[in-house]
Amino acid sequence: MSFTLYDASAPVFINALTSMQAWIEKAIAEGKDEQTLIDARLAPDMRPFSAQIQMASDSAKGAVARLAGVEAPAMADTETTWAELKARCQRTIDFIRSVEPAAFEGAEDRTVELKFPNGYGYRWSGREYLPGFALPNFFFHVTTAYALLRAAGVALGKPDFLQHLGPPNVTPEG
Image 1 (spheres, rainbow, N blue to C red):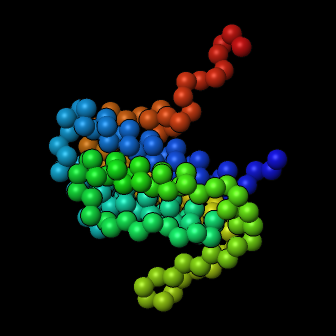
Image 2 (cartoon, rainbow, N blue to C red):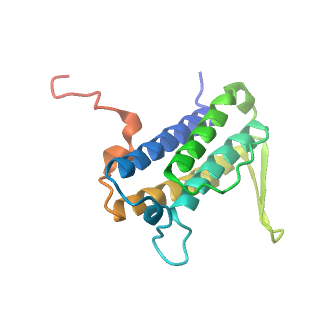
């Protein structure tokens, strides 16, 4: 069995979105001020935490839809609470899980086109799009969300970013 674009995308997106939900839970458990963190920015010209979650969601569902040749669900960017942001992550995870791996057959050669409101854009094959744009763009927003929470004092560390790994599977004994 070969490694496919499905393998390189869907599980990666699901793992990171699941981690993001857990980071929000940590912020809640630590009693961090919800509105302050939802509005937090790393720099004045950057989008706030809420938008980082929304854009990570959009990146993941858009990539899966484009590679699988299906329509991504529309999600209005109206989330203003921890609960709504966690639900946004879950709706995205649910969509990704609903797309069968078989839908990715031929995705390597499928044309993916992204157009901006000004008419400019990019065109790639699926094999160029996923590693060249979709994954870096997704992780830009995931990492920015992590950094915002971390900068605000939420007790996050690398194990939280890589929590999908679980405990080490190699021990000193074996």
